[in-house]
Amino acid sequence: MRYSIITINYNNRDGLRKTIESVVNQSCRDIEYIVIDGGSTDGSVEVIEEYAGKIDYWVSERDKGIYNAMNKGLAQAHGEYLNFMNSGDCFHDNDVLINLPQDADEDIIFGKALRSDGNIWSPAGRMTLYSLCIYGFNHQSTFYKKSIFDTDRYDENLRLLSDWKLTVKCIVADNRTYRVVDNMIAVYDVTGISSLDAGARYREQDIIMKEMFPERIAEDYMFFRRLRSPLLEDIAYLSTRDRLHRIIIKITRLAIRINKKISNQ
Image (cartoon, rainbow, N blue to C red; front, side, top):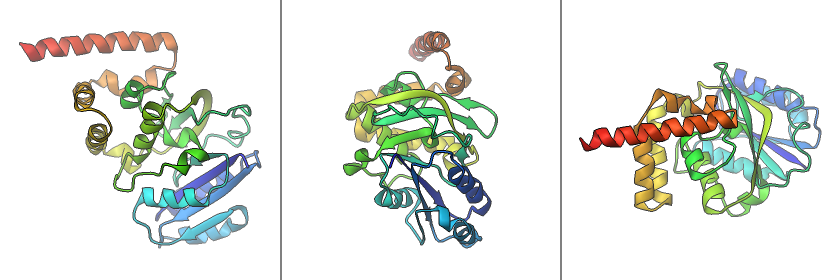
């Protein structure tokens, strides 16, 4: 089986229906579908039951948070590649999976996402610690080889960025292979908790960096994040072309030098 699609839901009935429909209507049939519900009381279970014939595994029970629920989904997955399309998000169109490169054998595949505010999120061309810290990536538009989870799981002690921590470990620490594709994968709901609370997101990133890397590397990262330039906030949307990417890097480096000079005065 090529793909396992996993949906996590809690009391988001309407979002869940949208997500389920985008999965079960995929033209690619070499998939299994898993839904993990956290014991919803808003009618979500009735929605799941409505589509039960097209869902390979589902459960509705209390969990310990989103990453605990995601780890539950991992335990039920059998596909070569895993994707988390959580309730409220959906595939961009019905041919997303069938249009992915069939020869792909990398550990992680990164794609593009259309944000619900109309902006397009594009991954960096090269995945490094720098690009993952500054640009990030879109979890819904990412496919992970199941073999990654033979040794790794999502850190259930984190609230917002366990997926970021796992991906940084895979790419930077474990040097796993990856491919960046130009395919539009997901429509991403920007009203989710990890999107709205930017301050909490940055604080959790700092915790992860201090845990994973030597102090001086972590300090450099946190200094860069403190720049908080509006330009830096928009880099992910601007850097869709390589030449523009290089221009942005030059501007960013200039901003760092200026900021250091000001700090030393």
